[in-house]
Amino acid sequence: MNIILFGPPGAGKGTQAQRLVAERGMVQLSTGDMLRAAVEAGTEMGKRAKEKMAAGALVSDDIVIGIIRDRVQEPDCATHGFVLDGFPRNAAQAQALDDMFAELGLTLHAVIEMVVDDEVLADRVSGRFSCANCGHGYHDEFKQPKVDGVCDVCGATEFKRRADDNRDTVAKRLKEYHETTEPILDVYRKTGVLRQVDGMASIDEVARQIGEVLAA
Ligand code: AP5
Ligand code: MG
Image (tube, rainbow, N blue to C red; front, side, top):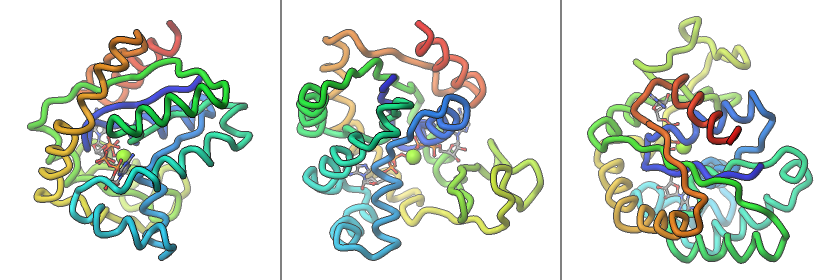
């Protein structure tokens, strides 16, 4: 099964994608994670993306379309299905994805919109941190490690925070979401693949609702 998790910054896309990886073996395709890895590694792509990401703006379409096109063709995606997290983000990316699916004979089973009030997003994003070793995501208030200072998944004790997780950049990312990303939902509404879950609910309840969508 191939799905898109759709929603604003802090909606819970990454959190739920990590659960789908752990519980169903699906492959998480997060353009944000891939771009951050490229920035950290100092690759040519990372150098091109760094400033845009720090400003809360979108990275150019050719970069993100290229990384998704390469990644969906790897064998694990065919075997386990994939979760697109943070892609597509504008009309050109949605069109490119549609063309790519047609060309590669892939099916898009559902676009799951995580519906969240704007007011909670700044708190979600500014409290976020993740394991420096395995990348598992946490929150200062809403999702703390079971043992303080130790990653639940890999036992590492180093954590990190994202450079773009400050209130100013979050406001810019949210504006970009409403202006550029949200309008593409109309395309998916028309093709009948759009489903909604209550992103304001607890992490467990959101996961349950996503499970229902996948079972339908
Ligand atoms: P990206 O990394 O995709 O960031 P984003 O879309 O802004 O989304 P986030 O990762 O901030 O939020 P999330 O929905 O994953 O929330 P999470 O699960 O972590 O993109 C970053 C940048 O990269 C972009 O600004 C752009 O520059 C570039 N980029 C990426 N893709 C691109 C593309 N396709 N085209 C062009 N540029 C691109 O949850 C947030 C926090 O809340 C966590 O701490 C979590 O524990 C907590 N939480 C989660 N769910 C709940 C819940 N139900 N209740 C309470 N707390 C919760
Ligand atoms: Mg994310």
